[in-house]
Length: 317
Image 1 (cartoon, rainbow, N blue to C red):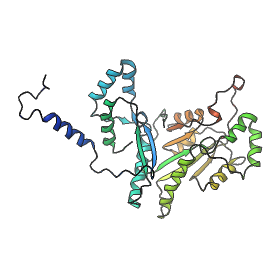
Image 2: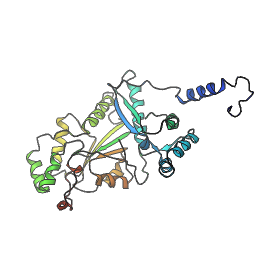
Image 3: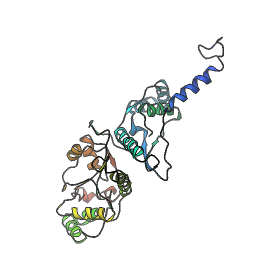
């Protein structure tokens, strides 16, 4: 059977190929910046369901199956997905890249954003269309319970301390011996740097890019801002955290010591694009206040509690 609308038309055999070529040619941005080499870039991997809102499509997949899901995607492939939880974060990364390219045209020290998905191959066209519609290329991130407006031109990243920037060695003392022993330990080891945690390298990479702006006299106008948001107390255990960062040659623009207070309300004030924490309690609190939060599965907080430990000891972070 011939495709509808082609029977008897001159050059009909060539048209499907020509139309397909024109369609795919139009997918590519007209002025796409050159991608940096992986060894020079800071690679950020983002899942498609974090970058775009796909709840409706996921409901079709769950309730009607894969065939209905693929058909829906094909029928709507020219309709861009709505922005998802990670979208403002990625836009801010691209804004930083734009300014870096203006200041350092030949530098490849940029963010390289990679879209990761386990979607059916047929969904790829809609993802590509969506990426090109918003002008971005694209780990698992938790969507907030409400919308919170964040900056379009300054990337803001907030980190928890123990078991995120630092190791969980102090957290282990809290769990095993309680807060009093923790305070004594931190005071005795104030000048001994903590071991590095899983996100130390990311803060280091952000700091390296910040210094590129500082060297141009743009410290106050820097489009990257970092925050340490920790439940440690400034008076009793904050000094070790700050001295650890100093020993690494790193800093955060702001260090906020909450002494065990909830983090959500403060995060609502500083409005980071993303907040990293190892405890789901804090991730949930951030979500409730509108902050996009990412859970870091590291450290003693990930171990299941024993039945005798049902009452949670206040954490030191």
